[in-house]
Image (cartoon, rainbow, N blue to C red; front, side, top):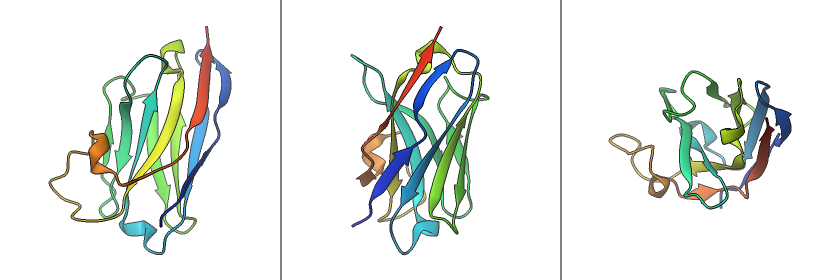
Length: 128
C-alpha cells in the first residue's frame, strides 16, 4: 500500500514562503499523479495543485495560481509545493494525495475522488 508523509509546514508571516514536501512509498512513483489539497477550519477541503506523472502537466487552484508551484522528483519519490507570497487565507492543513491506480487521462484532477491515497496532513499557519 502506498504511503504518503508530508513535511515542511509551520508558522510564517504574510508575504513569506514555505516549501512542503511529500515523501511517497511505492515502486512506480513516476507513474503516479500527485496532488495537494488543503482544509481550513470550518471549510471544505479545497484543491490546491496537481502534477501528472508523464508528461508532468501541472494544474492549480484559482486562489494559488501564480503563487504556488508544484514539482516532483522521481528519483527521490517526492513531490513539493513551493508556496510564495503567502496570505492569512492560506492557513490550513495541507494534504498530499496520489492517484496510483487506473487511467491517467480524462481525469478531473480538481476532485478529491480522483485520488486513492492520502497523507495525514501538515499545518500551515500564516500570520498577518
